[in-house]
Image 1: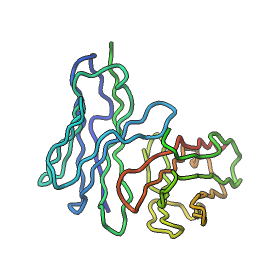
Image 2: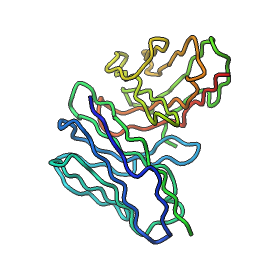
Image 3: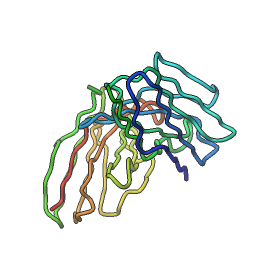
Image 4: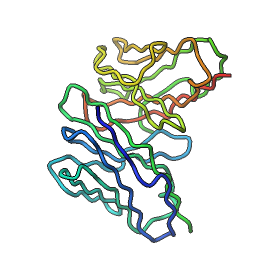
Length: 114
Length: 112
């Protein structure tokens, strides 16, 4: 089955700096790669996703890149703000397959220091 | 607010007991997923229902079971509880069998 590895497990940056979180996946059939943000006491919330037919997607300060050959994808947050502090999860799934459930990485705790 | 409602928010019980967690998906969503979140295992997929039918199973113990009712709400039943079952249990819903998942705020289970 699919396995998703996520690094680093913790990341501390200064406000205004960039943050990068990387994930690798094992199943080459995976074609949907979302990123979720989880704030304390809340459920994960989708912040951006990418499908295998594109290599990069941006949404304001957030971008995701995908390298299907290498089976890895990354989340980039620019101009970080204290409110970006949270746990971030990457995930992978096979859209259109018999099992659409997301397999999550272990998470990255991002701390943005003012 | 994701639109997914989970009850109860907190639950404390003893080993050997049985509990039921309830989830109401977003209006119009046919898929319900259950995930377990613990410090050491992260977010683990348990089970997926689509329009009342079981669609996929993940790392769900035999002591656990779930169902989705005709009104599309779902229940996760946990029996013969052990200390290691203490965790956050999340329900998520989506319109179809794939795509964006909307998570509830979770039910925190503590087994003493």
